[in-house]
Amino acid sequence: MSVPKAPNSTRAVHAGGPAVRANHTLTPSIAQTATYTFDNTADLEQYMRGEDPDPEREEYGRYGNPTVRELEQRVTALEGAEDGVAFSSGMAAISTAVLSLVKSGEHVVLFNDCYRRTRQLVRSVLSRFGIEHDVVPAGDLRALEAVLRPTTRLVLSEAPTNPFLYCVDLQKLSEVVKRHGRIRTLVDSTMATPINCRPLDFGVDLVVHSATKYLSGHNDVLGGVAVGAAHLVSLLRDSRGVLGTVLDPHAAFLILRGLKTLGLRVERQNTTALEIAHTLEQHPAVERVFYPLLESHPSYGVARAQMTGGGGIVSFVVRGGGDAASRVVDACRIAKIAPSFGGPETLIEQPALMSYFEASPEELERIGISPALVRLAVGVEETTDLLRDLLEALKTV
Ligand code: PLP
Image (cartoon, rainbow, N blue to C red; front, top):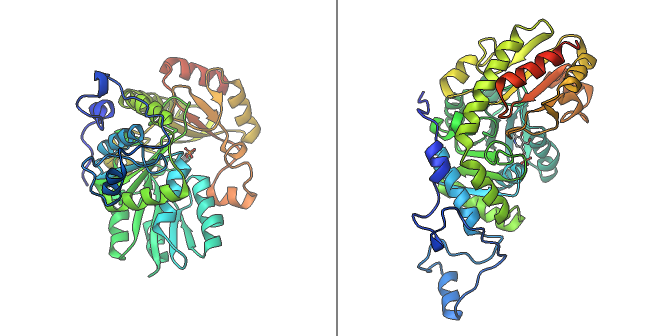
């Protein structure tokens, strides 16, 4: 198994841009345009025939934009991909990718501990179009292999998963899937970031990110990116032009700006989250802690081998049930109650009351979400301040 050697901070700052920009600006301009002009009809015809001398020339805003293109190229470089395409949100990236890769009569497999809206997309939306699916336990490659069919075209995974931070062995996943023919693997690597893990290095076909999270890093913009082999990315780009899941150039600028500090932020969040995870594990008011780099985590070995950091999310079960967990959440002064993660502000939530509020008791039971489970998404505040805040809050238990 090859492990990424170093964080990608230099690429996060520089990759994707031209050597010299128009007017010698240091930072990218926002190409705030909906359309592009042609000098004359011959110029237009040359472009339509695919013979324009400028390969980056655009025709219309839904098909491409230079600021968005710079973002696509930077994330492509960070993930070690051939090409990339940006979208208006993480779900826009995931839904456009899935709709590009499967059709009626085909079959999709996904792991149960993955983003709820991705599960909903597969279960409720794809099923209406005659696309069948199976959901298998997170990281269970035997269970995965058992449900693969001749019509399976896509395996969807996250690494790590949310909220239990389960790390599927990406190399084994790719090997299992490749043994079975024309199946593509799509990994949502939002939680890992290319600083902590690069799934393409392990043979995965496509990587998607909610750029809303760590890539932009400031809780102020929505976006998504997919990267991988050029021929696959090209399918997604064509679908984006039809579905209209296109990223706004100003949002692309904000994500490019946020990316410059990705390495710094993620390294800080890795360190703080690990320290909090260790502290919580010793705390009498905490029943169980989930963090990929805790030896007690079921996928610790895989996480150690394929990640260079454990990420910024720590999930834990508070002793005393849902009410006790709510008291802890309410008593936090620095951590704000909100969904999402990956920004400078530490956020806290009980998944049963937030992302899983509408889930049936059976679904909660199946996925293992108890009301006492708390998800802490670490920001970039001082580690000592965050620890003090949490320890104070745990006194309410
Ligand atoms: N993937 C993961 C792992 C997420 O946590 C989320 C959102 O929380 C998404 C995808 C969707 O991203 P967005 O909110 O940008 O659509």
